[in-house]
Image 1 (cartoon, protein in one colour):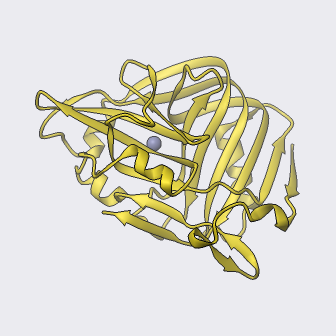
Image 2: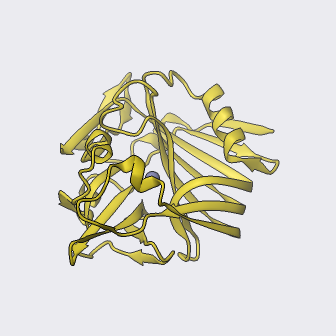
Length: 246
Ligand SMILES: [Zn+2]
């Protein structure tokens, strides 16, 4: 069972007017994109901007970081949360890379300003939560959503990626080598987005996309699946994506 609550409109105006636009009097933050999903999918893995650049455009986001050394590309799954950037490497270690030399080929960021909250009173799966969100969120074929899920994760599967020799194969091949970490009883936050399934698919990943960061900062990564309880979901609505650099 879930409970829906709409936060009063006044709570929305938390960000600079220069990075937002008005829609019927409500401030709507854009979503900013470094790199595009289309380019990442076609094998453009080398970073185009330092990861810390994203903090100029928001406090909430996800993406990938890369470093190159000895003809190899090293990947980290990244979660941008509380003005810090956390990278999750192939050994399952979380790094604070806010000020590090890692660069990003793909990163989605916004100023998080939730307009909806949902509470799930019963233990809930990833599948059941997104099914509920799909039934409640407005105009999902056009609007974009930033989504924070906080709770106790009885189990969660997160992944990172191994290093590859250059030239690195296409993303579909890279993902076949993903490294999966199953963790039980962790408390933390999923930072994510939902983009329309057919719109802007070349810039952003269509559908839901979540990266995790545990409260103790010991676990992160791209979320594949989870079972959680005491779940609270916070959702911000967005109308536009601005590509900062392709
Ligand atoms: Zn991801």
